[in-house]
Image 1 (tube, rainbow, N blue to C red):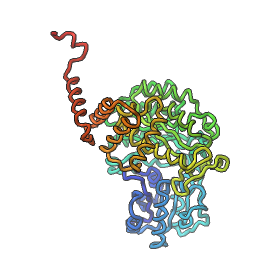
Image 2 (image 1 turned 135 degrees about the vertical axis):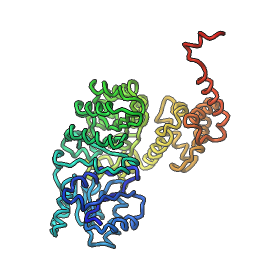
Image 3 (image 1 turned 45 degrees about the horizontal axis):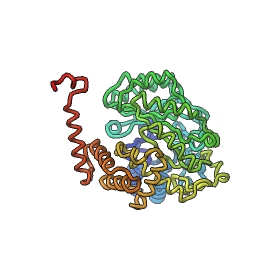
Length: 506
């Protein structure tokens, strides 16, 4: 039994809520009366409600996000139907803005709009003391970071063994990109670095080897970034993996000096490019030096072992199809390991809403509020691009088709993949659940019939792609070429290095 239960509906079990652990760590004297229970958004609301209510809570704190907004509403409806006496307190970005338009906030008892690390525990104290605050919407100022208890000891041994561990060395963002809620921040606030690194050392000692940093601007403060990178270099192991989000046009020599030291498989950098169009960048208040971005991406690709995950957004106001295509090809030429093609979303509270009328921005009224059409891209075009993004994930970002992909893309990556995307949808009517053997068959058919590739070259490329993943999922029509590829690999593995071959008797 717990007087207070903190909960949310995660996208997957793999994810562990950093926000809830901040709340738990900062409950003060109420910590012993508080329990954290996490679920996934695909669990039935009645089952989630039952498990919550078996704890006999007086207060339930629910984290609401864009990915669980619909399911969270259903959960609150069930809770209010069967246990109206339980106080429901909402928090999270989805309910921090535009509360009047949301049914979930009408049902809830209180809403904490913004950073609730300290505000939630204070509200609970008042409620448990018998007070009923008059204000339903509570909008606290961002708490001083040195007053917060850090959340990392709240990760359980099970979390460490089976789930992603999220960490942050700073909060906020100094940039004003209007599609992002972080544009509402005044700046970025760093945590005390000694205190933060001491917490990272404890996590590492407990066995954490995968650290996912949620900082919006990891490389903003180079001195702090260097200390963090050196901290992990000093603890390097085969199973260490780090994820950082970096500013694409800010990569001074002090960072380069350390980035080159990370071995393969240990470092992933998420690089938000979003658009290469200067007019679009200016329109959405995004400051980005495109030449420096290209130079830095090229350097990272050529000089480091970092896995590069670069982002582009479809549908930004004033970005027509030809502009997006040019930006995509420009980014593809730099060969990041992944290009995440995102569809513009109108996040509640994000300043991108100011362009709605001028650019005819029409969004899906249901979460995640994806752009349906605008003045440059009609609904049919957006549907094509939505399929493009899905198929790009399936084929290019999966890494399964490294040999066949160059044959498919040729010298116009965007144009040819859009052609392939149209063909694939016409052939299958599907954007999901295409089995891997069938996908190999479809790629072979597209390469030979739609793009006039040499059939032998296409079969050999696809066979190499089968072999690269242990031949799992390899369809029967490729078995002959797969055997040839495997035999060649065995011969090469047995043959002496070229510098030795000249000394063998001939």
